[in-house]
Image (cartoon, rainbow, N blue to C red; front, side, top):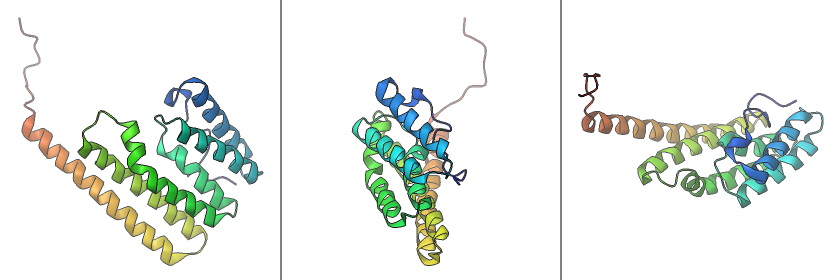
Length: 176
């Protein structure tokens, strides 16, 4: 049975990636969600096709959509393939963030890259826990925590920067 950590088709809208490709990706992920564990091989097939389409036609796809494939692979008993897919996602983080936020400053993109790393390592830890691989799960949990801490540190730094450089006014009356 699919768990709430990855429900293909939920929370996905065609607005994320419009046009025929976005619609096809949404349909495939929705179709995968229909299987609910009754037919995990079919769900894997749908999610593999969706992932390849997302890679061939980069757009703004939420990370949880990318994480569905390795999570379902692990649930389907394909742990090694799932870990390989997680590593592929890790290798693609910088490029994916750059494509999703091309106009952002490099420091902002780096901050969100750390958030992506955190989310991926967190799912890797969960997959290892499910396989009873306690040491690997702990290693991935440590990596997740490290990336989350960097993300939070960068968020705090950005907040300090804004508070020093923005001068909010208390006068909300329009000027004449």
